[in-house]
Amino acid sequence: MRGMSDTYPTRTPELHRLGLAIVLAGLLAANVAFADALPGPDPVWPGWLVAGMGIVAAATLVTVGRWPGVSLVLLAASTLAYRFGGGPATLLWIAPVVATYAAANTLGRRWGMAYALTLALVLGLPASDSLTAIGVAANVLRSLVLTAGAAAFGEANRSRRERAVEAEARARAAESAREAEARLAVDEERLRIARELHDVTAHSLSVIAIQSELARRSMSSDPDTASAALDAIGTTSRQALGELRGMLGQLRGPQHDVAPAPSLARLAELVAELEAAGVAVTLTDDRPDTELAPFVDASAYRIVQEAVTNVIKHARATRAAIEIGLEPGRLLIRVADDGAGAADGGWVTGHGLLGMSERAAALGGTLEAGPDPAGGWLVHAVLPLPPQGTTDSRRTS
Image (cartoon, rainbow, N blue to C red; front, side):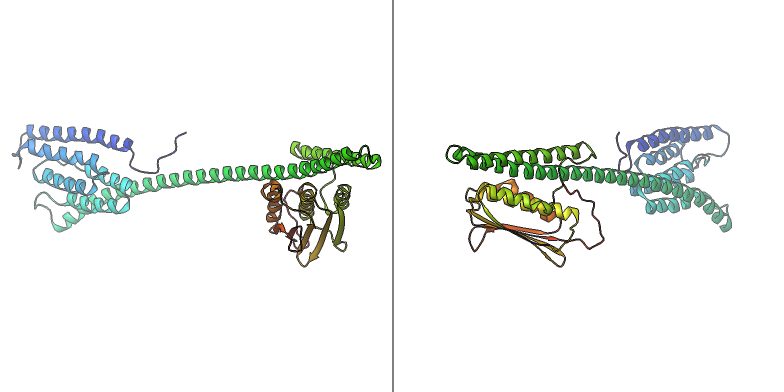
């Protein structure tokens, strides 16, 4: 549907005034001709000239919106000329009243007042000296009532139209804001799904790749190691499938979670995966029976999980340390290893670092990843903790 135009005048009022001007011009000319045909004193001016002044007055109705000053001067002059030339005053008031309405409706209050006052004087001044001062004042006052009423009506119509335009603009702005909010929600959900999918698949596939290579190399020389590697592959695959089923369940709607929720309580699983990959792990968890908010707990686990994935996939490390600590108002995460870190470039440019940074930023925290001055690679995250007793509506999976 086409919206209402924010600008005015439109062509429709101009066409209306053009039609009225043509009709009024014909009526004024006919009125002059009829008056000339009646017996009585001769007119002051020739009939054709008086009729021409009436036609000029009527024609100004078309030009009010485009040239208000010129139109006002022409209308006032032609109306005075018509009256003092002896034209009948029967229909003369129509052009000034309509022009005053059009000026207020089209151009605003100031032009409406200018037209109303000027044309009230033009209509109220006597064409002869037969009226007293009181009679002249009364005549001007009656004319002012007509023109001021027309100006007030035009201004009211203009205000109503502007309010309608503003209401439509506010409605469009509100609709645009709702659409932008919906797009933002969709984008955030896509990012969340991308992070979850990356966390589940990248970590699990890295473990499977390492364990399958270990099984292949030790199949002949060390069957027990190969068997343990295959067991690790099976365990990791089942865990990944469970988490994927959980993600799909959340996408389909509220259902019972198939897989356990991400939580630092599952750190032992990450440690076991590192050890199964041949990395000696030191775990330090200094959280004295502290229950974290679910969204902080899940994000912290995912950050540690991605850091562990980096150790397995990129670092070629032999030792790693996972440290979880608490300070007033914040949770500290530190994952360090003695490997090559991002020597292949995958960690620096891949989705893992971006996903961890987004998770930390979503909570108002910070994350740094890079070479450790002591050697190896270091991931350090600081996540703010919400005040006790508060809740959060963010998704935690």
